[in-house]
Image (spheres, helix red, strand yellow):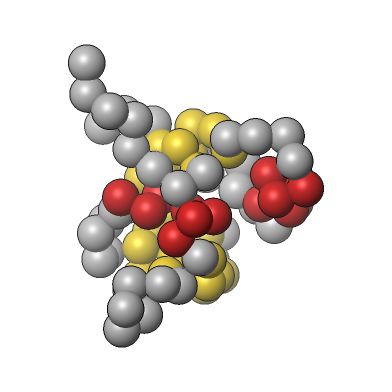
Length: 78
């Protein structure tokens, strides 16, 4: 069985659809409030020089996330 992909696993210019946000804490709530909800398409834009933070596109906006935050966003299987 393949491992579940997260937003942090996307390469530059790759897209995925959000399946779920892991957790019930304030970070999970904040991610949902800014638009990381199931069914939304996300696109990796670029990485910072050392790989953290990452820049993604969601709902027409560019958002920067730490890699640890992006690892909590599960993507639907391809």
